[in-house]
Structures are given as C-alpha cells and as structure tokens.
Picture 1 (cartoon, rainbow, N blue to C red):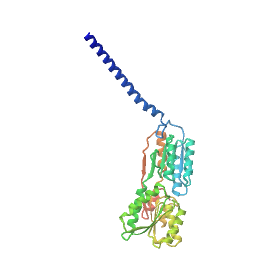
Picture 2: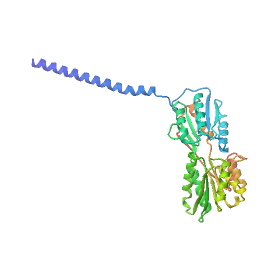
Picture 3: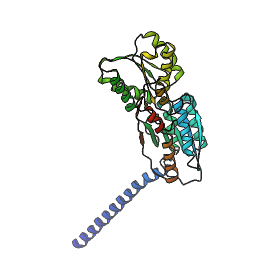
Picture 4: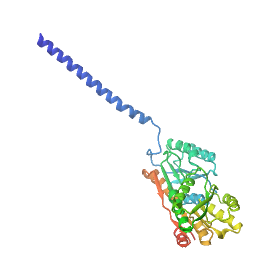
Length: 343
C-alpha cells in the first residue's frame, strides 16, 4: 500500500508540474502577442514604407516671399523638380503669418500630399501642425528653419551658429585692437535663425573685448523695415563702425538709410545669404555697398533630391543635413559670383 500510495502521489505531483509549465507557456505567448497587436493598430508614421506610385504631389509651404532668398529657394526647388517627371510641386506663401501657414499645411494634409516641405515662419506655432502631418503618414522635410521636437522626417539647413560666429570673427578681426561700435539688425523674433545667428555672433566677437554693441533691433528679415530701423539708430548714435544685418536685405536696408543720411562711408556693412542673383549680396560687394557676407544655401535642390530618394527608392533619410557656408568679401566676390552661377 505504501508503494502504491507513493506512486500515486508522484503521479499527482508530475501532473501538477506539467499543468504549471503549460500555464506559464500560455502566459508568455499572450504577453508577446499583445504588443504586436498594439503595434499593428498604431497610426501610420511618415517613416513607414509606401508602394511606389507613377506620380507624387509635393506641398511646399514657404514662410514668406518678401525675402529674395526665399524667392530663390522656391526657384531652386522648381528647377530641381524638373529632373523628376513624376514630381508635381504646389506652393503656398504664408506671407510671414503663422495662422496662414498653419492653414496652408492643413490644406496640404487634406490634399493628401505625398510629401511636405516646409520652411516655418516660427518654430513653436508651427510645431503642432507639422506633427499632425507627420503623424498622418506624410513625410516632412523642414527647410532652413526648424520646428520643436522631432516629428519630422528630415531637416536641411546650414548651421546658423557657425555663420553668426564667422561674421563675429570677421568683425572682431576687421576692427582690430581699437574695437568699435557695432549695430545688430536682427531677424524676426522667435525664428531659430534669428536666435542662432545672434548667439554665434556674440561668441565670435568675444575675442575682441573692445567691441561694443550700441544698438540691436529687429527688422524681421525685411529690407524696407531695416531702412526705418536704421534711420532711428543713426539719429541716436553719432559713431557707428560696423552694421551686422542678420540677412543681406537688412544689411542693404541699413546701407540705404546710411547713404540717405550721407553717412554710408563712416561704417562697414556685413550680412548673410550670399545670393549670386542680380540683386544679391555678391553683386552688392562688387558694387561697394556691402563689405562681406556669409553664404547661406537654400537647400532647395537637396530637399527635392532627398524627397525623390525617399519616395521612389524607399531610402531612409538622415535626420539632419547640415549645409556648408563660405565667407565672401571683396577679394573673392568675383570668383564666388562665377562659382554660384551668377553673371
């Protein structure tokens, strides 16, 4: 009896252990399948692969067309798109109005564009609608200016901090040990380029402790506004050695105001963009209006080329593409005009 009882108890024990391992195995299977079910139900993102199409609609949301540099950006996008017969690009001009640009992007979402290129007017106000497009499965390339967060496919732009620092170093070296009085005419408040160019500039002039910033005002990237801003600065300051405009049109505007006051020969003018167009800064340097500029590539061609890689080849794009820059001054302006296709 004892032997039979021992056999019986052993059998019961083995049956219990078998049931326990079976139950554990069922639990493991359930836990691994649950996340998979969640993943399959998750909303599509812009990184998801899509079947190849015969044609693609690209929405280009531009911050404004009041800056010649942005007109050039659109023109370079249009020229680059000619290489790809399967691309159709439609454009929207926000006219420096955040609400208008939000509505423009909403419209592109409704149109179900295959890809969105956007140069945001301001980072914070445009972040939510860019995220909405991205979360809807539309790849997004931010061009020049950034949005907050990382809900975009790729950002293309030059390093504004490096550009600002280069200009600051040029000012520090040009003014020499005596230093001097500097005016800073800044871009639109709230834009990443404005902040980054200012921060870089302040870093660049650190090497010359005798430089004094006597005035710093916003002109919102616009030439005409820079004229009126500079008029007030000229009235308030009898000695100005250098004017730094955050872009070339503002530097040109400052020059115009100084010339109207008969004071343009008292100071130097430096900007950023370096366009080779008839009204661009390279021609201005050759004409003696500006003294230097730093190249700020539009990134238009890169945006279209990378859009084609993503949409037609299924290539994964780098999150950040940093474009190079170069100083242009009176010594190399003619060479740079030819290099960048000017006449």
